[in-house]
Length: 524
Ligand code: HEM
Image (cartoon, rainbow, N blue to C red; front, side):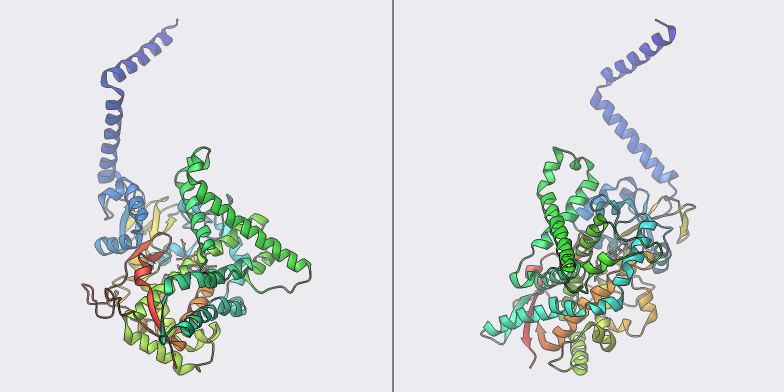
C-alpha cells in the first residue's frame, strides 16, 4: 500500500467517524442550516438585487410565489405587491417584477429579452410553438407564417363563422328559452354560455368542426384543453412524472390530452380529404395554417407544428375571450349609467333587426369598444406576470441594475392601475379610452412589443359582436336574489364590489354559478 492510498483511506475514515458521531440527520440539518445561512447573508449583503425592494422570503425561495399561484392568487398578488413596493420589486430568487408602463414597453419591445424557461411547460409534442417559443427565430418564423391569417382583414373574412357560432348561436338558445318561459324574461348563466360559444367558435375556426357545444351544453373539448395545460405544466415542474411508474399519477390528464391530439389529427385529415375530393376551400384558421408559408424562406409548417399550432389556438383563444366578456358583462351590470350609454349607442346606430358585424362594431361603436378596453384594463387576464430574461450586459430599471440572466416579470395588473398612467385607476370608466392615444399606449392586456397577442383581432371580433348585439337585442338586469353584488354594494374605495376572482392561466370568477347570472328580456 502506497503512502498516498494510506492517507486517502484515513481521510475517508475521518469523514466516516464524523458522520457516525454527529448522526446523518444532524449532519443533514447542519448542511441545510449552513445553506440557509449562506442564502440569507448572500441576499442581504451580496446579491445584485439586494437594494431592490420586495418581500424577503421571495428572495430566498421560489416556493412563496409557487404557493400563491397554486392558490390562484397571482393577480391579487400582482396588485397588492405593486401597491406595496411600487414600480420594481423582487418577486423570487433572481426574479423581479416591473409595473412602470415605460419599463414594460422597453422589456417587451424586442427579442433581446427572451421568454423565460417557464414557457417550456407549454411546449406540445416536445417542440416550441407560437406561445412557448423561447428561441426568437422560431417566434419570428411563426409570425411570418401565421401573421397574415390573424390580421384584421382575414378575421373580417371569417366573420360569418364568428357570428354564426358566437352571437347567433347564443341568440338561438336564448330565444328558445324565452319562447318557453312563462314570463317575458329568462335568467342565463353568462359564464357557461360565453365559454361554450367561444369554444364552438374556436373549434369551427381552428379545427373546421361544428360541434354545437353550446346547444348540447357540452364542455368536453374545454376539459381536454384544461387537462392539456395541466399535464404539461406538471411534467415541466416534476420531470419524473414523464417516467413510468410516476407517469401513472397523471394518466387521466394525459388520456385527455391524447383525445385532444386525436381530435386534432382527425380534423386535419378530414380537411385534406375535403380538398382532395374537390370541396371548396373553407376560410378559417385550419385552412390558413395548412397553407401558411414564410414569404422569405418559403418554409411551411411540419405536420407536428401544424398540430401544435391548432391546439395552441384552442388553449390561448378560448378562456381569454370568454372570461373577458364575463368581466365586461359583470362591470356593465355594476355600472347602470355606463350600460345605458352603451345601449343608447348601439340602438342609436343600428336597426332592431340588424345583426352587427365585426367590421361595423369596430367602425361605428366607439363607446362599446371603449367598454371592452376598460374591462381589459381592469382585468388584463392573460398577464398576471409575463416573464422574460434580461440580456447580456443587463439593464438598469428604475435606477437598479438588473444583471444578465435575471427573470423580469412584466406585471400587467400593476401597469393597469399604475398611478402615473391612470387617474382614479380603480374606477371603471370607459371614457378614458375615447380618442385617447396615451391610454392605448399604456394598455397592455394583449401584451405590447414583439410578442404581442396575435389573436387580438379574432378575440375582438368575437367579443364586440356578441356584446354589441346583446346590448341591442336584450335588456339586461341582475337577478332579484343576487343581492351581494350590485351598483349599490360598495367597496372601501366607494366603487361597486366586484365578484371574487382566481388566476390560474387567466383571471376567472371563483363562483360563476352564483355570480355570473343575468336576466335577459327581449328589447321590444
Ligand atoms: C381577450 C382575449 C385575449 C387576451 C386578453 C390575450 C392576451 C394575451 C397576452 C397577454 C399574451 C402574451 C402572453 C405572454 O407573453 O406570456 C398573448 C399571447 C398570445 N395569444 Fe392571446 N389573448 C387573447 C386572445 C387570443 C386568441 C383568440 C388567440 C387565438 C389565436 C390568442 C393567441 C395568442 C398567441 C398564439 C400568443 C403568443 C404570442 C407570442 O408569444 O408571440 N390570444 N395573448
